[in-house]
Length: 161
Image 1 (cartoon, rainbow, N blue to C red):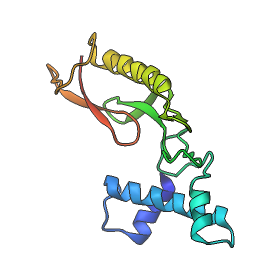
Image 2: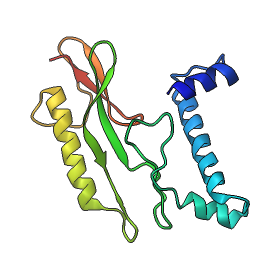
Image 3: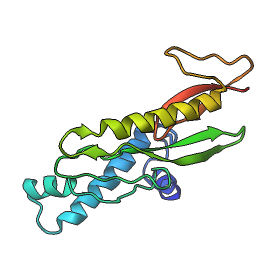
Image 4: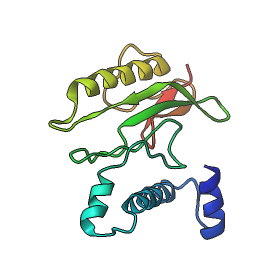
C-alpha cells in the first residue's frame, strides 16, 4: 500500500486513496503493466491476449498479502481467493487461511471446491456474528455495528457481541 499511497500523493493528490475506484484502477494498471512486460517486444493483439491469459502468481500492491492473480487459456477469473479480516476497534486484522475458489478449465468454477470454501466462509461469519446460521437479510446488532471485510471489497455487517 505504501507505493499506492505515494502514487496517489504524486499523481492524484486531490483523489481519495480510500475510494475503491482508485484502488481498482491502480491494481488494473499494475496488472496491465505485467501483461505488457510478459509481451516483450511482441505487442500484437494475439500476444497481449495470450499473456493476459498467462498470469501466474502476480500480485498487486493493493491486494491483501498472499492473494495472487492467476489466469489461463480457459480461466479468465484473475482473483479466485479471499482473506477474512475483522476490525479490532482501531484497525483491520487478517484471520484464518486464504480461502480459494479454483477454476476448472473444463467446467468453469469448480463447484465442489467452491461449495466447501463457501461453507468455511459461512462458518467463519457465523462465529463472528455469534449465530448458528446466516439467513438472507440485514443483520442488526443489539449494541453497535461493525464491519467485517471479506476479501477485496465484499462486506458483511457484524454485531459487537
